[in-house]
Length: 295
Image 1 (tube, rainbow, N blue to C red):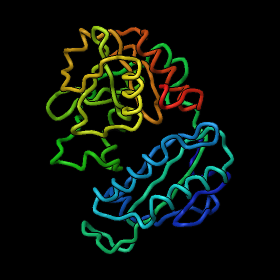
Image 2 (cartoon, one colour):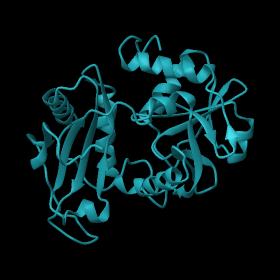
Image 3 (tube, rainbow, N blue to C red):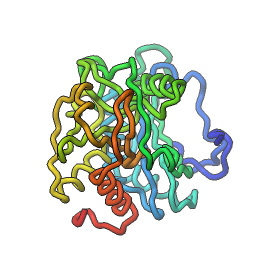
Image 4 (tube, one colour):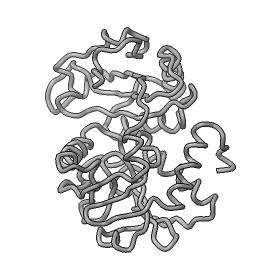
């Protein structure tokens, strides 16, 4: 198991590359106690960060959702990401930019805290095992639900929103599943713990409207690929009982990429033609063998 506090290389920390083991923060940092923290997940393919501009802009926007301004411009953050990737020397890797309120104040009010920013890069081949991914991962429905938009900053990639993801995934793994399906506060299908979800019904692609969870960058990319193939993509409210009329299911995310789903609770699905087509095209796109225009 990888120990994340004991790695070689550098992490970009508040404007400079520092040795990995020296990139530390105080235990009384506000972000640690009150979840005043936002982050991104990005992938490097062949030495290039895929969709770097979109991810960096979302990091900035997420900070604004949580009431703070990240003290670096879009261009500065992009260059910092490239510098960190180059410093680590990985051709394929995962990138984690993170911004959080510091230790200058402790309590609910934290107006005068410093906003810290770090960017780490490490090798992370696949979110799920290759075997599980190609046979279709197994999900079970979580008891935790995605909150209403007037309950939490649901359109920010905010650390606090992932608490119920961890609880849901741990519960699923304890039952022998790979991940969990999360419903929203209305009982509609929302997403898995770290990825958007798509259902194939009668040759059409259905996906939940992202009104209380992230409209993922990979989600939008895959929708674009699907439309180029002439598939009809329908964004709508989807109820759990509709899984009975579903032939294929897949999830999308920066970490998950395009991952087929073989089972959700008692429902079984095939890894069918549409899922395989989108998976292969997405892999070709991120590897640079398929252009965005041709996808």
